[in-house]
Image (cartoon, rainbow, N blue to C red):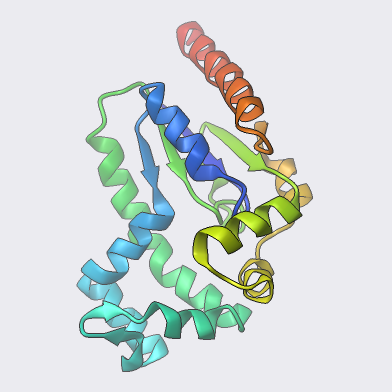
Length: 197
């Protein structure tokens, strides 16, 4: 089985690329959205978050996302602490998910794969990128945030130029057509590799 990691900074269009992969018959584990679910379902993770950030972290049994965001997007140490609590739980959940897949190619989506040094756990790393102004516009539209809020949420992510060093393939996701063509060629080269092996 070939395990592909799809990464890229917030707003680059990772989800769009992952949906294209699913259309090609490749199962995708969405680590960012799965992490949100686990923060509301995994009792030991919930306890750890309350221990680190206080009882206000949860409201009516659900993660108080606005409150947590107001802390972690202002403080690199707090963000790192949260990631260090969530990451091992997500990793375990992913491995469990992989063990249930029957396909010879699977994909794992994560915005902070490289920041966590997790790229070595995958056979292929695909970096999705597009210009910062387009990314910021997409996030503002999608999440209803101001430009200042977007900048605060993205300032701890590594710049794209730094992430390129760790990628096996780059997909430029400025236009859908361009991204589709590039992904198609990447998938076909991965499938050829599988046939050789």
